[in-house]
Image (cartoon, rainbow, N blue to C red):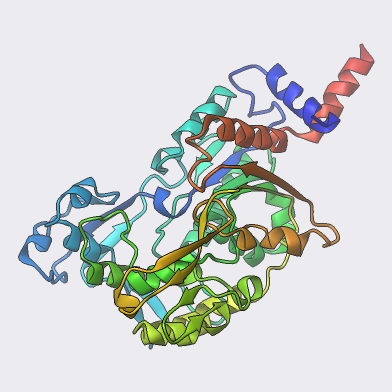
Length: 421
């Protein structure tokens, strides 16, 4: 353990259990969850026209219900199509933006609190044991994972709303903790959102309000499964959903196009192979046409590709933690049945979901940038979802967060007091 980290952890352990954060030199923490770790509520209005009568059973009710996660739909084949229908988005090429299906109103509950996050309880408990308090020094920033943001010149109402809320939350976290900048901890798709959020904020704001970001499995170059999911449909936690419905749901979501492998990272690597064609990140447009998703071409070319053509350094300190040495889908080979069949999978290295080439993209791009502080921690054998379920991995993640939240200013003050005695 290096000297700085030893001092940081020693100071952390020396602080009293309660009240460490409000004046003890520690920085507030904001947690940005991954794709499936966000709750989503919904209500149906009179404008909702269900494809099946059973799907409109809640129509006209004023009460909100939990749309995601929906355990009933996961176990009941009759409910799965209703959930898929209500979860789907619509892209309006004239408005150049995404929206909910007609008559479906959604909201993200518990924004600002860690209680709105799914699967983060092990990490939250450890941080609370170290003195952090929900909505006082520890915050959650869930989002509607179906949406994303867009580049300048293109509207993204839901994405812009989330970025505005996240800005206010980080500023509030700082105010509640003696003006200290926050440590932002993000996982998976939350890393992509956080990264684009940082780039969209003025540099002065970033340096004032963000002490460090801790990225868990930040595959900023997309991943191979992003293409296969559009081709054959992702089950989205709905094993009872028929393949055509899975495909429609996957293709409707704005965030699905963000998960496609990017040209600058994947280049000409074959990702999807059919009897007559090979598709890489450099010919995504041809791939979208081939799978019958030509309506995805416009949003991909105008709203997604410009945001991921390069990976500029965020110019705030970053700790990047990711798993390695796990069999990860790298190429999908479709046989005689084309995209209607089940592909043979060729595996490579990564964390089980994210490909190594994408996990190391930021590391390669930012390492030589003057002024960009980057620390990389590789966890052998740790899967994409293992950061919170594997005790050893969780311990390492907490240690990195502890190192980030203890203020150097506090070290100096304590040393000065000791010297004065």
